[in-house]
Amino acid sequence: MNVWHVITRLILGGAQENTLLTCEGLHARGHRVTLVTGPALGREGELLHRAHAGGYEVIVLDDMRREINPLRDWRTLRTLRKLMRSARPDVMHSHSSKAGVLARQAAWDVDIPAVHTIHGLPFHPYQSAWANRLYIALERRYARRSAAIISVADTMTRKALAAEVGTPAQYTTIHSGMEVDLFRNRPPRADEFRAGLNLPTGAVLVSQVSRIAPLKGHEYIIAAARRVPENVHFCFVGDGPARDEIASAVRSAGLEGRVHMTGLLPQHDMPAVMHASDIVVHCSLREGLARAIPQAMLAGKAVVSFDIDGAREVVNHSTGVLLEPGDVDGLTEAIAKLAADEESRNHMGQAGRHMCTEMFDHKLMVDRIEKLYRDILER
Image (cartoon, rainbow, N blue to C red; front, side):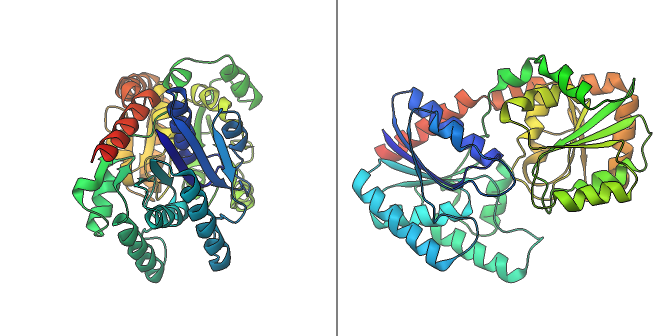
């Protein structure tokens, strides 16, 4: 098949890793793959170098940006329409909100079936009512221009349908795949990473891997860090627009010696980070299904997460602790209890590893996506 994938930008992120693994998997199976993206701007790192090394065609459109800009967006739409009319892909598969709107419109205009993956819904309770109305209206409109919609978690489907986005028959849940063996096996770099933090003997390391941005919940972890035993250390892996603000909050709380901010790390260091940690937390207030959660479980780690979006589909009493969003008291208690109970951490970690090994295998993800394309073309 001739398959196009379109994503707004290739920063370090879950939707981007998902997209690259899909492109790589389809390319390895002999399909003709083209990946279209905007420039990887910002402090969150980039995955463009991996895309260019993938052996398939990569097109970078400078006008495709995350921010709404009518002139740039119109030029992007016009360019996508022209490129698709020339290449005539069998299927166009979009990712992320901006690309989902522009690429689905372009595909519709030139009569190409469109698939869209919901990695996280653009409407949520933490933004203004008018913004939500706009995004819901757009998602409804472009669901009608979609041959199929993929959700990375069942919760995404329920929320979208509750907002009258699409119909049940359009939706398929396909969990966001990852290279499971890289996370199941402890790399030597894990010991180096932990040693580099200069932790005291007997320290328990609690890590969050995410962009440092609004709604990612670092402030809740800082609040809990002030109240747990001093042998519990914390690690924030990542970068983003709120880095300076979070670093200032760490200093104000007097936690510089216990909260370690690594900044951006290469994608290939993530297995080492997970294995070096004793507990992995994810305190984001909105997320499709954070890849850090199954990655931690594959590494055999207990997880503490806020109960948002798809988290409850993998975090339960057997694999970790699920909390109400913003529950600092619960977060403090969960971290303190797990830090003091290595046996419970190990039991949870093994249960999580068993659950996630097949569920998040990227080969299974590509199998299911490939089958979905074929079903669409047969119809």
